[in-house]
Image 1: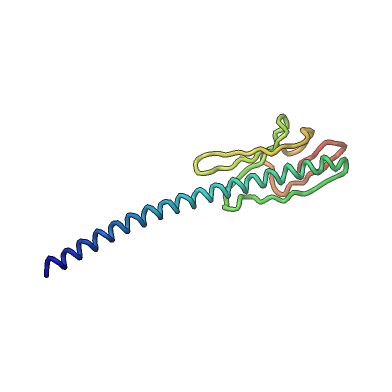
Image 2: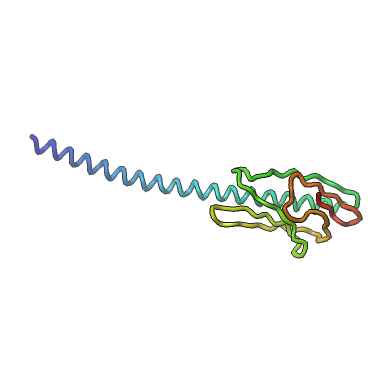
Length: 139
């Protein structure tokens, strides 16, 4: 009778150990996916802000002299991550730079003109864009 009880206890311990190992493996996979989703969301948010600014600049340029627009951008990404926007006139791009873990990431959005004056690095928010005689002014 004692052997049967100890055998049942041993089997129960083995079954519980296997179940815990399986649970830990599954939980580890879920945690990894969650971290990947946060990084992906951060990247998409940064890209959206760069595209929003480049779209505003392109719209004001294409609208012609006298056109103006204010582009409202958040001071941080949705998860609180800092980012910066710069305009590279040589390559006709708006560049957004943000950190992802220990890495610095960047994304470029195309512009139709390089004829831009005013603030082109460390752009603050909101951004005022004006077309004066074909020159885009960023304030």
